[in-house]
Image 1 (cartoon, rainbow, N blue to C red):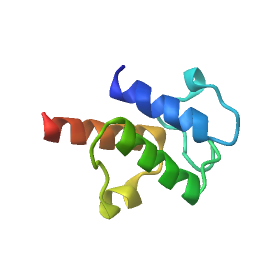
Image 2 (cartoon, rainbow, N blue to C red):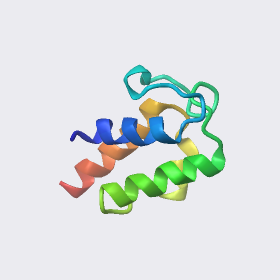
Image 3 (cartoon, rainbow, N blue to C red):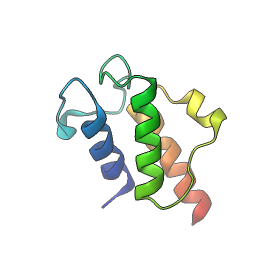
Length: 83
């Protein structure tokens, strides 16, 4: 499974607006479009780190993530760092 698919799966499961994973697109706001609040966002982060078996996010990086695309880019950047 590709990293973006893992991110999409976890975001869809945590999102409160009931949007199917196939409908989640890059520029969707995690909070406004998907209904993910700050505690749910931390859950997404923890699940991603667990699923990918490594620490991905710094506090500085977390503060910059606003959209689904931002989240995918952060995971991809860390994948490149670990490659």
